[in-house]
Length: 230
Image (cartoon, rainbow, N blue to C red):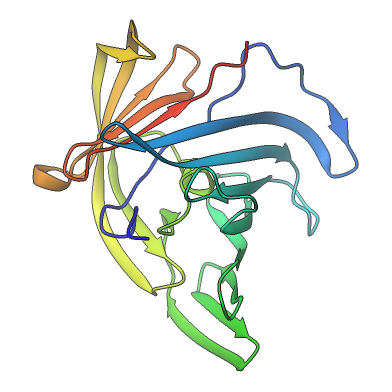
């Protein structure tokens, strides 16, 4: 399914206002929520994600886990992803398990020197390396939520990295201030940010706490909205 791959998407993970953070064996749960993704009037996907403090591999940072269902009525996830972030919200490691015919798994390790991507399938293993990325977000055509954590909120250049395709795209994040937008049939005043410009622009809206509420990609007709928690 052609989804986000042609239109890089950047967002910030929202924090459920009514959810009390709980402690698990893997760390403090900071967020647990879902996004519904539509194209025009058709629901095309759903993503359920959890954000925890600490890294599964150990050390300071965050761990984001996602079950992505495309189409939304699918019985099992098309992809299960785990992404670890450093204290600066920069991606550090990732594992993407795709439920496809040959069931590939992709492993990513990002350092200050290089980015290494390993792909495993029943037929064998391959590896690629890329130059280091000082400020990056990860992209995959089936995933929105794993890309939700910005490596810093300031305006400026960002590198969008698609690990499975091995593509990199340098774009710009801009802050347009407060604005009115419809969410679930109700007008809300939210912070408006944009990623990129021209036909491929992405419109991002955040609440007063800085958490993502809605994303619009006019070029593709894709909209992603966070489900209410109550």
